[in-house]
Image 1: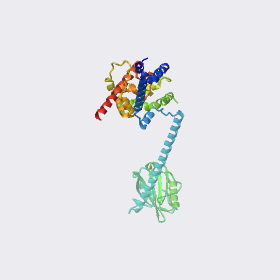
Image 2: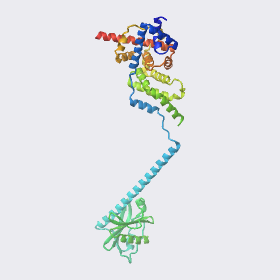
Image 3: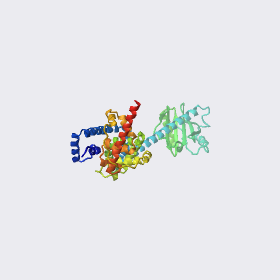
Image 4: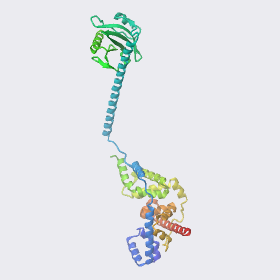
Length: 249
Length: 180
């Protein structure tokens, strides 16, 4: 093969596309042909230069990460794990709802006690604390007829240290109720009676008087009515009056 | 693991090692970073979608390059470039080596810029075959599969690409000598 034929196929040899036999023949020729050796060297240099220059563009790490994310297998939860997660989530929701319910109920209860204390203080501070002034329960009770949407009984205070001073209308949560004032020694005690629904069931019955805003308070529900006994008298006095009312109602 | 996940897992293992070289090729094709990223993104999405049709054990690299190239050719830039691509004189004899070529001097200067510029100015069908052969070191068979052309066309197109590149380099050198 003459030099021109070799040179015409130089690229094929250098691209590694010739057969082993052709490569051996080419190698033998180049070793003995200065012209072909020089051309081969120039082509090899050119190939290396193109290879180096061609590796020019590099993707950013962020782009690589983005593409990898887009083709990555999607994580799949097992059926059991999904149910466990759902159950755990339900428990959290239930616990959260219960806590919220308790918190709301407690907040409403505290609000109710606060309003009861306000009614007690405002009434005693008034120049006319009662609208019906009488120590006779048979006078006071009928006074509320037609004023409040329920009826209640007042205890017989004979042989007790309590005395009835009178009564007036009171409002709690826009609902009308009865406000009675009793006296024990030098203390005045308020007894407030409302329909249970007026307070939205936010209170729980206490077996004994407890302190609220430094007043002693007893409350209970009876016959669909909510009773409050509040005053600065001792807890024993509050409880005794409460017992009399409970026994009557 | 589900069949779809197994498939995605295998695809990631095969495709991510090719990421850098595919990106380099895409950037040479589009000559624009944003377009190259779009092209790669679309290529990987298409390849993943069609991976079920790929036969394991066959040439995955050529398959990926073919998807990339087809995606490029149907893109706005690709369509614009291929409309100006000469279709005649595709086949032809191999070019003899020219003696004492000025491009060898450029090459000896170890300066990549003139060469990169010359490659960049090549028509897209010359540029891509040169990158596949010289940079990606693909065999003629792989190039043939990637470009969907016969091996004879690969050889002649490659030869013409090299000759055109040499002409560009010579022209650059003459311009440089003239302005000096």
